[in-house]
Image 1 (cartoon, helix red, strand yellow):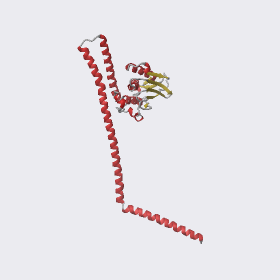
Image 2 (cartoon, helix red, strand yellow):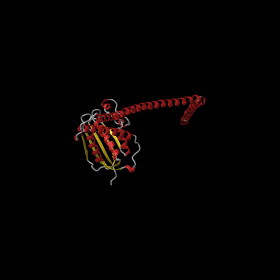
Image 3 (cartoon, helix red, strand yellow):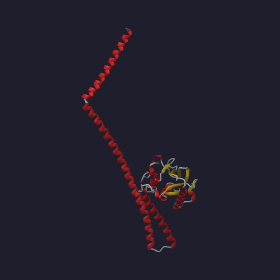
Image 4 (spheres, helix red, strand yellow):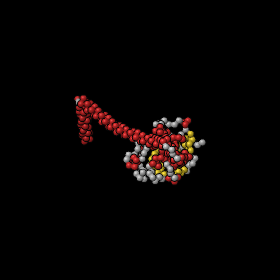
Amino acid sequence: MLMSGHRRAKIVWIAIGVCMVALVAALNVGWIVINWKTGLLMITGALIFCLITAGVVLNTIFLVREIRRNEQHDAFINAVTHELKTPIASIRLYLETLQKRPVEEARKQEFYGIMLEDTERLLQTVEQVLRAGQTAPAKKAERERVNLPELVGECVALARVRHNLQPESVAFRTRSAGAEILGAPDELKAAVTNLLDNAIKYSGNDVHIAVFCEAPDAKNVIVRVKDEGIGISRDQLKRIFGRFYRIPGGIARRVKGTGLGLFIVRSVARRHGGRAYAESPGLGLGSTFTLRFPAAPPR
């Protein structure tokens, strides 16, 4: 009789629980059935509100990016205009001097040297603009085996001559003299030259640059350009490789340039299956730029 009483109590409580669950379910279903129009409107309104908010946020982001892009484009136009007008005006001045009055032979040779330097500057600016417009990778037929340490050594020697620097100002070392990659020599020279020019320009009057080229393993060949210049803040390390981008404010802003040099460096690295990146301990502590390329297969 005792067990029967317990069993009956359990059944009663279970039945009460089932009835309560059924009642709650019925109330909820009934509320939805009776007020389905209001609920649907509420859900629709919430979805539309979320979509409108997302649209406003995206539109603001794109607007800010477009404003920055336009500012960079204007800065690029101004920089290129300056880079083109200055040497042209210089060449014209010397030509007019040679045309209007007699000049001693030694003076003539000096004028010719200055005009050649100005034409070289013009050529570099034009080549930078043209290379910045190249987006397609080099064709396989255009690629050849390139001795990278030898190519980097030539670029270093040319940079010393162009900027009138002593050998110790731009030191070059390699531990892998025969390291080769597959690539287009002209593009590789442009990338290395841009890194060297940048390091020299941002070093100020006291130029101390170390250039390394080595093969750390059988799959990679790297070029590293280390300077003791103005350095780069951490938030700028990735942005400096953008097209037209120049570090705002400070000493960097006073250095002339088009904002294309590092963009070309990164583009050349990518077209050769490699990568380019920058490192810096901080402002005033110098910086290191690295080019990493896949090594050519063994002969």
